[in-house]
Length: 168
View 1: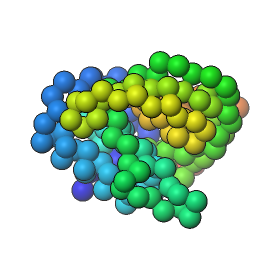
View 2 (view 1 turned 30 degrees about the vertical axis):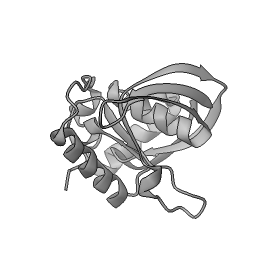
View 3 (view 1 turned 90 degrees about the vertical axis):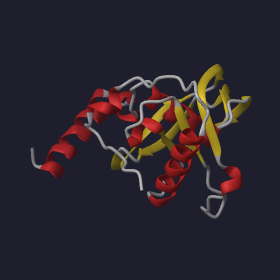
View 4 (view 1 turned 120 degrees about the horizontal axis):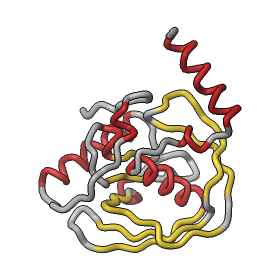
């Protein structure tokens, strides 16, 4: 199984490269990312979180009962947000920043263009939870973590908690 890298690993700050080859190797990576995401109870994961600096991510929003279904899985390659509107405050967590949750301000509705695992062009309008998940994962592809979006006070609280946890 793939390993999820965690903050402060410097790889998380790397800007991911566009995917140009849509082959079996990519499909194997996407399948492995899906397995890790489910094993870690995540709703999204980007390739950089498993130390692969390519512009690929997965999102699988759970149903009302908290269950994730493979048919709801979005495999998103080379995403680009082309429209954004509204604001939403959403409590976020991250597989690469375990056991820390905080409210982050995001766009409430976005339009995204991307490619699927076969390189076919796709377009989607996402709202609320799905829009937040897209923005969170696309940030990863650009070397940005949700903790970067916190106020200075909340960021200091996070850093202090991290130091206590790891006894730096």
